[in-house]
Length: 170
Image 1 (tube, rainbow, N blue to C red):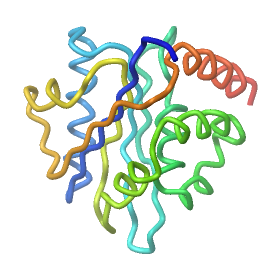
Image 2 (tube, rainbow, N blue to C red; image 1 turned 90 degrees about the horizontal axis):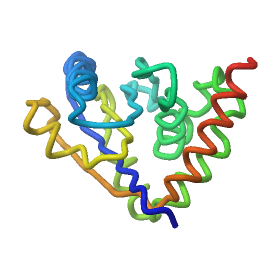
Image 3 (tube, rainbow, N blue to C red; image 1 turned 45 degrees about the horizontal axis):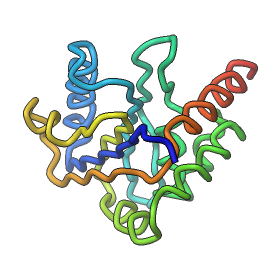
C-alpha cells in the first residue's frame, strides 16, 4: 500500500445549483493551492432514480485527474448511473474496481444512500483531507461525509494515466 492517501468527500444539496456553485469553491481552493490534486463531479438523482452527472472537473491538463476518477466513484455508488456514462466507455472499468476495493460494503451502502430524488451531490476525490478546508470556505452542503479510501495512491495514478490515455483515443 502506498503512503499517498486518497480522500472522498460527498456533500449533498437539496438545490443542485448550490452544488455547482460549491464546485467553484473547490476550484478556487485548488487555484490557491489549499487543496492539491483532485477530481470532482456534480451528480443529480432524478425522480426515476437515475443519476446524471452534470459537471466534470478538469483542473489542469497535465498531471491532473480528469473526471474519470469521479465518474468511477459515481458508478460504484449509483450502479444504474454507469449506463448513463457511455462516453467513458470501458475506460472507467478498472478504476471502478480499484475504488470499490478501497471501500467497505457498508461505506458503499452508506454513501449510495445519501442522495434522494431531486438532490445533488458534490463528489470530490483528492489527495488532501477535504472536509475541513471546504467547511472553512463555506460550502452549503446539507449532509457531508468524508472517507479515506484504502487504495494505493501510486497505483491509482498509474491507472488514471492509462485511462486518460485510452479516453484520448476515443
